Amino acid sequence: MNVSQILGVVNLWTEEINSLSEHSFIHYVQIFENKGELMGCSNAHPHGQIWAQLSVPGEPGKETGQMQAFRKDRGDCMLCEYVRIEARRQERIVCENEDFLVLVPFWAVWPYETLVLPRRHLADLRELSAGERQGFADILRRIAVRYDNLFQIPFPYSSGIHQAPVNSGMHPEWHMHVHFYPPLLRSATVKKFMVGYEMLADPQRDLTAEEGAARLRECSEVHFRV
Image (tube, rainbow, N blue to C red; front, side, top):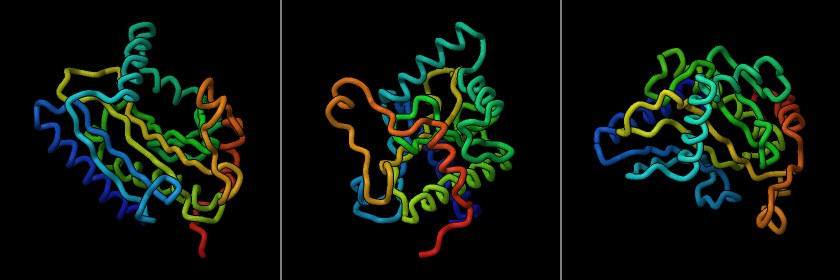
């Protein structure tokens, strides 16, 4: 998909959030996408779902708590501060444009896990300007192409947008972001499995965040040809 096609998806996501949040009993809208058989997909192409629900799910709920605590303690947005730190250091940045950056977070569990972050503080997709929507579509294409180029295959992953809860008051602490969780480890056929110690005690990092970012940075932004 080119940028204009991806922009159509971004616009649709935004319309769906607007529509679903009109129901006062909805408190969270989770947008996510799966790609590849390794992620349990029957369809080979990337395909997404939108779940709207009464409660805030566990993962964005934990993020809400951490962002609220940071704002109370520091008087600032946690992810705004993180964007400033990573942009200054450039060690874990994979790619960036005027409005967004993609990085391998220092806490990454999956070898090529990435986080897509807007440079500007905004709570959800609906706050993106027209130009930022274009930038969002552009950065999503850049990271998707790099994943495919890494091992020269249609790279499997799950990705999802985390954003502020809806119909639950103001959330000035929230900074929208996108998680990419890809399962491949060393090649197109070697998958990372969470077993043994990792399942029962603590995840082990097969690559440092810096190594993962460096390998993704080296991938061209021109899609490989089969």
